[in-house]
Length: 196
Image (cartoon, rainbow, N blue to C red; front, side, top):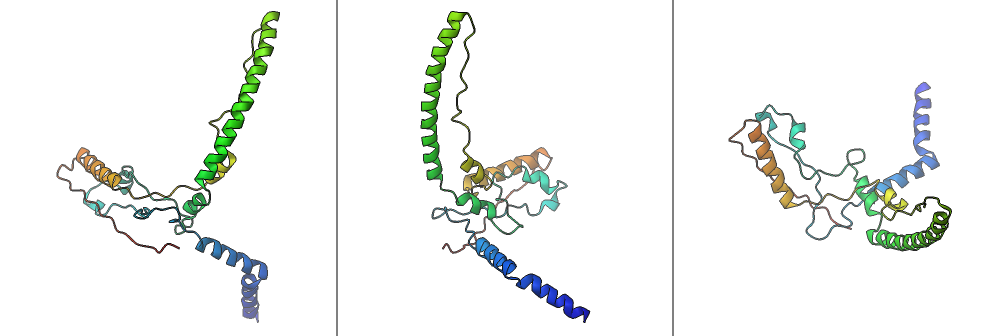
C-alpha cells in the first residue's frame, strides 16, 4: 500500500500539466541552442583544451592552463552551450545602430547643456562667482541591451596562430622549469556537427 502511494506521487510530480509543459519548454529551448549559428564556413568552436602526458613532469595541470591562449566557452551544467547561445540571440548590427542613434541624441543634449551653462556662467562671473561645469551624458557607457547580452559570451573560434603561440609558450615555460629537452606538440581534432 505504501509503495503505491510513492509511485503515484512520483507520477503526479512528473505528469502534472504545468510541470510537463515546463519540462517540454526547457527541452525545446535547450535543443534549439545552436552555438554555430554565427560561424562562417571554415570556422570551428574550441570545445576542449587539455594537456596530455603532464605526469612526465612534477608540474600541476593548473600551471599549464595559465599559458593557454584560447580557452573554451563556459557551459551550463557542463554540457549545454547556453552562454554562446545567449550571446548569439542578440544582433550586433542592431545594437551598434541603436548605440549610434543614442550617441547622436547625447551629442545634441550635451551641446544644448553646454550652451545653457555658458550663459549661466557668464552671469555667475559678472557676480564674482566661480563658473560651474555641466554634467554631460557619457557616450562610452554601456546600454542596457549590451549588459544583458554580456551575460553570455562570444564563441571562441579556433585560431591556428594562437595554437602555435600556446605551444611555444608551453615549451618556454617547461624550459624555465628545468626541462631543457622538452618537446611540446599540439593536435586539433575536428568533430563536425550539422548546421541547421
